[in-house]
Length: 407
Image 1 (spheres, rainbow, N blue to C red):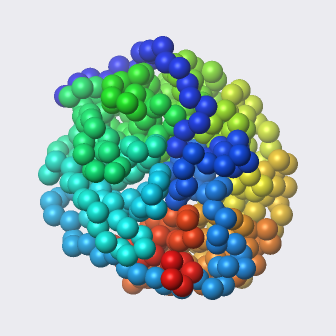
Image 2 (image 1 turned 180 degrees about the vertical axis):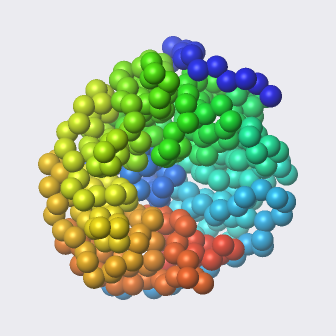
């Protein structure tokens, strides 16, 4: 097992302005490809699909359950969670089910291909760029130094394009992998602390590596405004949230005691990084400088970010949902009727989908309809919206699709 070094080893690389995650430019001029977007599809972790134009607030009232895709329980001892991934083209659905990566026809539920990682691994994240699907896996070989693996597949055929493990560089305790332009951003934590490794999307080779200390917050890969948001140590050895250049890993700024949550856009048009301050407030920071822009009054956890609003849990215990103006941070609405703690949400075309099945009008906070209910008391663990369909995981062994009749 390799020993992690925390110096930045940068390679010169050109940065593409358009990647797998939607940008403001793409939203205005038309996407390179249609897509589904959820918690893993964009490295900004915005959980918003800016390209969806079918499931408007009016159309959602006509949404029905279309079909279920079921899979057998996973084998082996690895932890398992189902993940819904984005669709880069050709109206296909990609998902992690029972620790394996698979491609489905969403119109029929038919499986097109299915790929398993090595037995000691379990896939936990998927991301896409063009005709490449990237899957990140967590290993169960060691509690303190868990092995990890990242695999790139041809989206059409499922053929392996490249595969990297800790044998090639120190990739231990991987939590997720996401794609931005020509890069794959991975993040996780092991006995040595937090790490961020940036890989070349075309061949899986390491571009640069960073990280240090032991964060108390998120270990997701996060990129906002082409800045990788990571954790390192300050001069006193305390954990500090840091902004690093996506292309080179060069440190731009550092803030001690902060924990990041999410952002608006991973591309150069990204302007807002949402993080929790040492005093517990949720603030918007400039991703290029780390300077605070405004606070989200009463917010706890950011659920989704679109071009107009930031949606977050709020209230005394985070049992409500609030929406804030993305430009000023002013609260626009607060829903106090649901009174159910929300851990996951997704926004698309003016509708905010909550993990327990409620669909809200994103502009007003009013409940439009309830699409699904909790499975054995559990809420959805994955939500993806796009191409007129909603993909949801509530049953550990099933992926449910909702949409307009006949879709």
